[in-house]
Length: 228
Ligand SMILES: [Zn+2]
Image 1 (cartoon, helix red, strand yellow):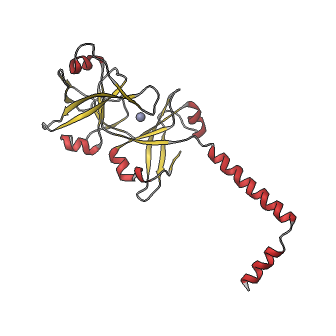
Image 2 (cartoon, protein in one colour; image 1 turned 45 degrees about the vertical axis):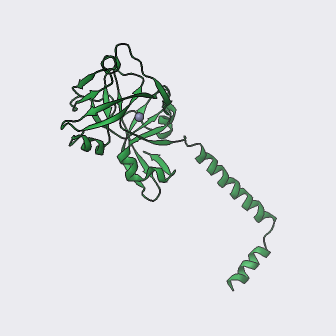
Image 3 (cartoon, protein in one colour; image 1 turned 60 degrees about the vertical axis):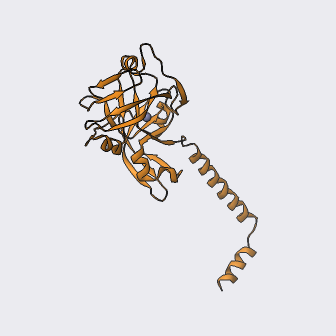
């Protein structure tokens, strides 16, 4: 009986119905097109790394040494340098091949994932936005030409999203707001404290650390969504 009804419906389809279906499809298509205007979001895991100041660069790599460009990062003007250092934690444990990211900064800073911190003997690394390093632990940094004792600047970088003023307007957020990032896929989860960082030249881009990326299976999915 069901199939008879279906056959009937198919049999009675007329021109006005066809037009209606075409309109619906067109509307859905427009809907998708609008969705397609959502700014393209790139979510990336940042591996442990260091930013150096001029003074520390001089000590670690020799007076006047410059960073050697290795590859561009997604944010304009930022790059991975060829230079690496060794970091010594509070109990003498070390991580070598710690990559330096350029350009140079006003103050040196080391960004580690939680497990990197554990490995080095930092039991509770403060979660901070880049640059916010008051009251953070220090470490000894060894370069090819010298050794620096950082008094502070070792942090676990807080998950954050870079965006342009136009993206901020699109989402209705302002600097220092927090957003949600939903990551789909088999290990998916939602991050509830994604710090908003707005800059004129920023490209829409979430940075999380390697622990966070592993926890949500970031490499397993392209299904990511940012919301207020
Ligand atoms: Zn970032």
